[in-house]
Image 1 (cartoon, rainbow, N blue to C red):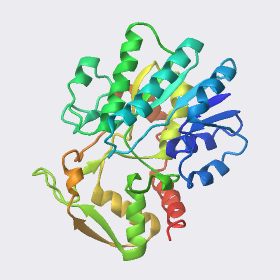
Image 2: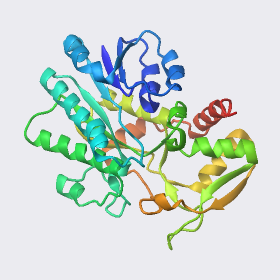
Image 3: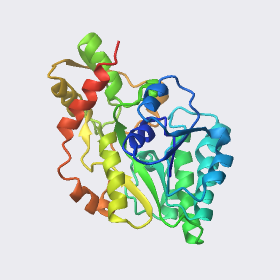
Image 4: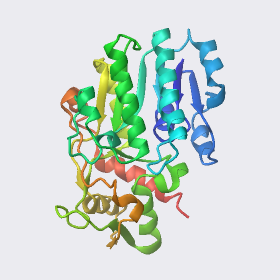
Length: 321
């Protein structure tokens, strides 16, 4: 039996579809109607509302072989501290203790947002003191950092699951993001703009070191992420924090062109102003530092970025009205 929190969400539902031969417990809030489509692709799973999960987990505790904690409030615009603490920290700590007490392997979703503006680098080898020194500008990134530090401190005192990994996902894109609406990856608005107007809108740069559209992100496919997770387990990597990114950032212009190439449709690039509410914490550059996961990247050397992107954009385009 395998538990996936956030199993009706983006990465969680994509992972669940690859585990249909297993008995699954999906924990989620199930608050978005779009998630019905994702759940239809995961037939036969036990669906458990978050508020009811404690008793269910206790009932099945001796049968659970692996615990994936991928549920969170992932909005970068969340601003109510109490809600973020409850959703992203309290429940994460509860699951950590549950897996520690019952000796269940545990994997959870962290985020590259924990690296702030990147001025301190993007290394998953940082110590607690180094992590504390990073300035983070939004509540989401802060909540993920808080739990990362909690996990490292629990490891220091010997209170951990038998094996655990905190995955610092970089800029993930893919299908099953429809419920995220404006918080979805840029692939979704880019495709909608391209289909409806023949243009893709990119933010102008307010940074002297970056030209318009030359901002760079480590864009990573959700399908790449799922293969990455499987290889962590195949290689039995040592517990700890791990970056999940390609290590090869792309400019927004390059990524927009990749999307157009995948559809064999040439559009125009239009530059627009960065909204005021994003300017303070906008990331101009992200790049996964992959020395801890070098063996995984060797195993995934044949992952076909172009074919994967083509499948994703065509699937998304079919759902755009």
